Image (cartoon, rainbow, N blue to C red; front, side):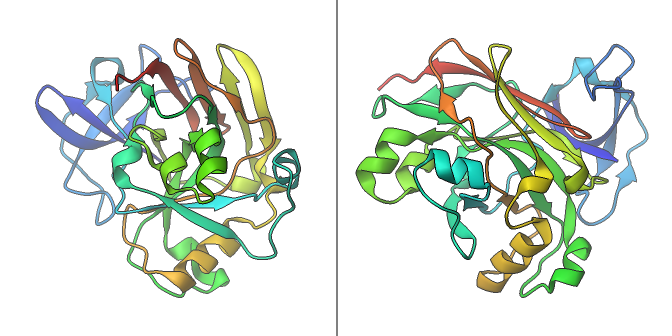
Length: 264
């Protein structure tokens, strides 16, 4: 099932998406059925149906925290001049960094080197702590596409990653949540202006999804709607004003954001 969050007029809803094409893209036949309440509790159709092209998709969730994993693909660790850590390397983004598909990524005036990092995002569906690996499926609501936008020069300058990763608009998520996905069977592709920059099978992660959820939950309580970004493959590269960057994952769809300069 595909679950989105959308605006229709002045109202904001969660909804179930149907009628996509074979590439998980919106067509004239695509529809969304609004859901009463919150999908993490119970999925109850409201009763109406809207054309998906007539609504505005929002970030599919606003998490209390976005927990990210660094250097989880060997080739990306190598291109950054390092090795994969023995244990998952964690950092975080604030919820204010989250935007949805179609929303612009703002290039901050403080940085001259902003880069894309396409990733699989895991959406938590229930409050949990210390989840055993064999119970991880019980706490996952679904998966979406993410872009761990990074001010690379500030990351190097600061020696830690909060500012470089935490600017407003630096955590695009979307376009919706896929509740039925086997990550090991999916590929991720990142394009900028239609040119492929990153491509990899999600099965090439060093620490897979169950290991990451178990590890993160051993450190902190996860709440419904919290998001774990699972790392990026090799091929990260620059974004400049006027670009359009897309993160596509087979079985989910494509997250696309324009890039613009932010006024100081």
